[in-house]
Length: 164
Image 1 (spheres, rainbow, N blue to C red):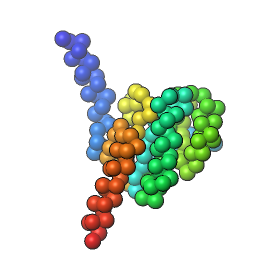
Image 2 (cartoon, helix red, strand yellow; image 1 turned 60 degrees about the vertical axis):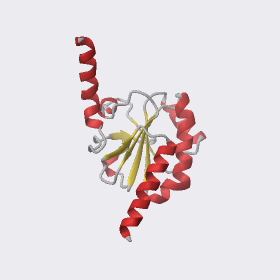
Image 3 (tube, helix red, strand yellow; image 1 turned 45 degrees about the vertical axis):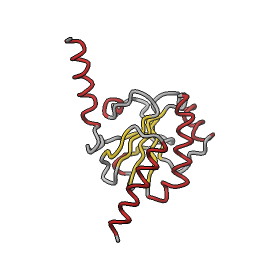
């Protein structure tokens, strides 16, 4: 019916800028010290972009797991971690970062919702994890720790084979 069709069309418009292979939308936000940070000014071979909420039950489990994998393996492969706070208070966010020793990440928030990141990145739940390449193109979306590990292992092996 028309209502269902409209919902499908609306969802397609929402997803269109976020498809794999598309350039990630510019993202400007404030770090924990309220300094301006830009996604495009963050050099990295790969960027794991995580939209998360310090009060979200799933985030409380997955963010430390992402950090452990990054420290153990991904960091040495040139992967940058950018975490963007979606909900919760500034105090809850900073406390979570301290409690879980999330050092080495770039932590950002958009307290005035100036970036419209929810629409630009189709953030409707947390954690939302995207993997971007060196040029900030979306190479994978909605991945868990294991899928990110498999993807990075595969692409690293492929790049090593290409150099031989």
